[in-house]
Image 1 (cartoon, rainbow, N blue to C red):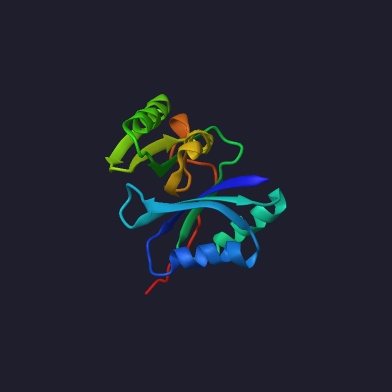
Image 2: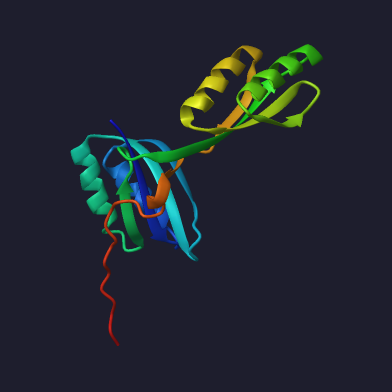
Length: 176
C-alpha cells in the first residue's frame, strides 16, 4: 500500500541524504519525494510517497525520529489532504492546427502554455497526480518530446493544516 509521509526537519548538510538512506536501506520503493523550505527559518519539509506495509512504515517512522534533525513525522495516508504536483510537458507541434489542438487540451485542464517554439510547445500543469496522468495520456498521441514532474507536495486540509498528527521529537539539550 502507498503511504504519504510528511517530515519536518532542521536544515543541515546531509540531512536529506540520511533520511533517504533509511528508506533505501529498507528496500522501499520511493514513488515521490519533494523537499523545500517552510515558513519557519531553517526548517525543511519533506513529502515522500512510499510503498510498504503499515508495520514497515511504522518502523521507518520510528527510525526517522533517530535522525537528530528530524522534528516531526506524520503519516497522512488516511487523512483529508490537499495534494499537488507540477509537470512541464514539451509536446511536438509542427503545425498551427496541432498547436491549437494541444492548447485546447491544456485549456481543458486549466494548464498554461509557458513556451512556444517552431516545432513544440511546453505546457505547465498543476494538480493531483491523477490529473497529471490524465493530461499526459491525452498529450501522448501528439508526441511528448520531454517531460518532468516535481513529485507530490501534501498538506492536511482545514484548520489542522500544519498541525498534522505525529509526535514532536523531544531532544535533550546539553547543559553547560
